[in-house]
Image (cartoon, helix red, strand yellow):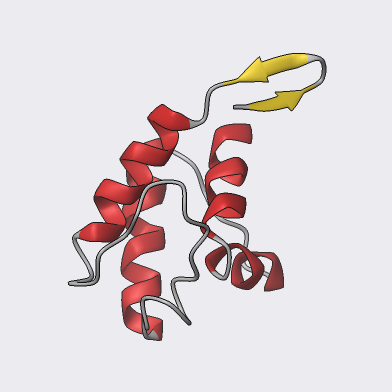
Length: 87
């Protein structure tokens, strides 16, 4: 849970959905609660990253802006989860 604007938000439902999508693209084990990097820890290439981001856009009905912010997010899973929960 995180505190946003004085309100506690449960990120677990978003985290579970995000991990379910990511797990489809890797054979590596992802431990719940770990802040992992899709690039460094899971060794995703650019094609896998685009596929995962596309799946996340469909699942959460959001659109990722094309910028370096996305690169920061894929380097930290928790930032990606927070970004999605804010949309």
